[in-house]
Length: 493
Figure (cartoon, helix red, strand yellow):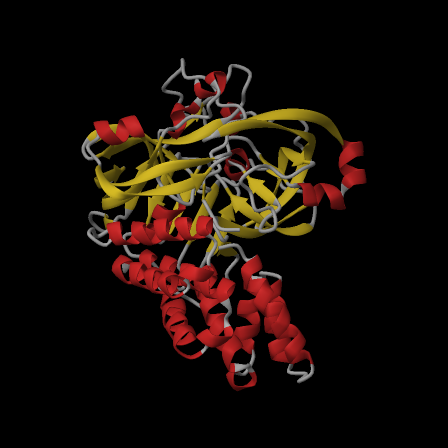
C-alpha cells in the first residue's frame, strides 16, 4: 500500500495531540507523516515509553518493524494493533496495516498466516473496498495461500567459509550503449545451467515464460498483476532449487511473465531480464558483500546478530532497498539499483530544487527507456562529475541523468536518486547488512573522492578495474542502453 493511506490517519493524530503538548507524540506523528522511518526509530529509541500515546507506541513498532526489516518487532505489534486499536484505524489504514502484516509474515515463511490475515480483513470490509482494489488484494491473498504449500528460501551454504558467488559484468544493449549488467554465470535452476541477472532494485524474482517451462518450475494456481512501465499479468511458480555459486536455495518463488517491451527494436536486448533475482533473496541471505574489484558476492556462513547500530537503509512501500545518502551535499533517499546499467538518475524534485544549477551546468537530452510492458521517452539533463555520498563514503560520479518529469511506475515521493550499477562499482565494495539494515561502502584506492578532482573524463572500467577480472564472455552480446526493469506490485489507489 502507498504511504499516503497512513498520512490520512496520522495528520489527524498530529492535530489531536497538539493540544496536549506531548513532545514525544508530536515528534512521532511528524516522522510518520513524513515517512521518515529513521527519525521515527530514533524518537522511539530515546523517548520514555510511558510518555508515548498507547496507539502511537504500538503503531510505531508496526511501521519501524516493517520498513526496517524487523519482523520480530512488527509481528507482535501488528497483533496488538488489530486486537486493541482496530476501531480507530479506519478503512484505508486497516488495509495498509493488513498488507504490511501479511508481508512480514510471509518474509518469515508464515504464508498460511499471511493468507488468513488478508482474507479476514478483506471479508470483513468487502462492501467498502473498490472492486479494482479488491481484485489486487485477493490476488495477493491467493499468492500467500499458494506459497503456504512450500517452504520458500531454504538456504544452504556449505562449510564454514561462507558463500561465494562469482559474477561477470556484461555489456548489453545497442552498439553505442555503455550499460552493464551483473550476470551470475555459475548458476543453475533445477539443475539447468543458467545466466542470472542480480538486481538489487528488483523487489521480486522474475523468469520468462519459456525458461520457466524449460526448467521445470512448478506453477501455482494464482495470478498476479505486476507493473513495469505498464501493467501485465504474471503467474507465480516455484523453482525447486536455485544454485548461485556454492549457495543452494530450495523452493524459490518466481513471477513468470512474458519478458517484452512490446517494441521489436527494444526487445532485441531484453534477454538479460529472462531470469532476475533481487532484494527478496537478499533478505534471506541476510548479509552479503558485492566485491566489484574481484567480481564476487560473498555471504558469511553465519548471519550476524542484530546490534545497536543505527540503520541507514529502509524498505519502500514496494519493498525496494532505499539508503540514506547525498548528492552535491543534498541529503536524500536513494534506490540501490544494480539493475540500472548506467550510473543512475535524479528525479524531477531534485531538478526543481536545483533548476538553475542543472540547466547551466549540464546538457539537455532526450532519453528512451524500455522495460517490461512498454517504452517511453523523457527529457533530461546529463550532469557531469557529481559528488555522491553513500554508505559512509564519497566518490565523484562521472554522470547522473537529471529527469525533468516523473517516469511511469515510480513512486517518486519515496526516493530522489536511483543509484545505478556503474555508480555502485565506483565504491569498490558494497556490504548490505540486512539484519541491522546498514549499507557500508569501501571505496578502492583508485576511486576518486570529492577531494581528489582528477576525474574529468568518462570512467573507463577496463582501465580502472583490473582488466583480467573483467569478464566479457559474450563478445557478440549487444549493449543494453536505456533498458530498465522497473517492476512493482500493482497497488490500489
